Image (tube, rainbow, N blue to C red; front, side):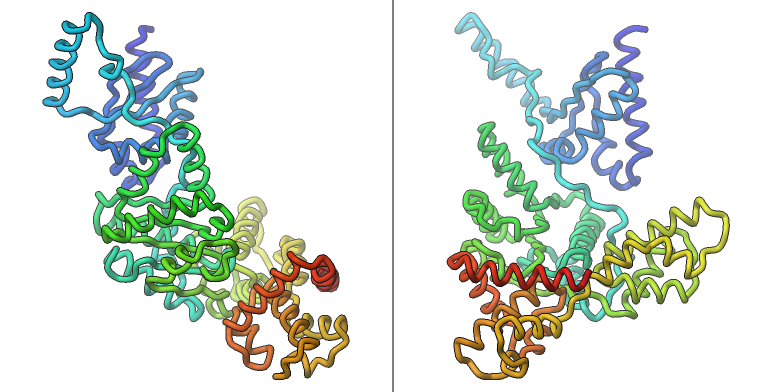
Length: 467
């Protein structure tokens, strides 16, 4: 078999597999216009007419292309993505090259046409999940504002709420909303340049760009997108250089009217060691939280996901799952995935007893995790030898204020209760008081070892009791 035949067959096979792997709209957007310009047994060079597309494909899909090509070739295959040069520019370069060659007797290395325009990215951004759309997002009372704001941002990027800052506990749907916004933006404008990235990956890419002297390319990518969606922004905590870079990226995008959407597990002013100038910018637009879904919303979510998995469960089982698996949506989906797997393997109808046995370990974890603010208050009162009524009362003597702050801190740490609910449990205090209490305790734990030992002891005791 000749080299040309092998290479041609290799790319055709790889391209066909990519078409099967990705949804039609994703394939059409990123792969349909790729042209294979160099074909050998061990190398494929693909060109696109857009530098943005080249960067995006390298960052998101290069590993997948290499993996598929290798599976067909049976050995390592190098894949490069290049930007197609306009014909006029190519002719001008060739003329310039001849002039330099005649003048110096040798060609300048900067004019080599086999040099790839775009270098491989240091890491790969998380792909947008095709199933995370607005159509399959179940809206409950705890996420109505976040959902409505996300739709507004998707339909009017840079004009509705900029930035949009959404915070909430893990597994409550923040990432789903970010992906849904990206899908809607692309539906409205297929040419929109959207970057969805976790803060950890943004940081790693920034570090790599510094090491490899590629900061210009890094900035070119992030400061020329139409929308920047950054997940887990709380991971900026303590990363001074990354905060500096993100500050300038934020300013560049904001001033040019591009959309910024940030997600965090806590409000911006609760993120430790985050620069004040970033906190203020994160609060420029709309800040909203997502709270844990209530029982009715959990049932609706379970039904929605069960339909997507093509499994049928009795209402009794749905209600049982909604009641017993309530920490977050991700755990509910995990429970359904386990049930779906069992349902495919066992050819008999699932009953409630079978479900309870199948999920016994998960249900035990759920039950063990449900420490209450009331339990925390009683434990703290006993430890510091003050009355329960004093802990939740209005007195502000130092002998009472500090234990009260510790109880608020532990409540924030061990429960998923919203800040407002925690404040209500302490005599109707507002969420700002809870935030202040948590920061005070954190500062004292850093400065005083005995305080840290006392708080750690209480957390350990409460954790034991709930297990």
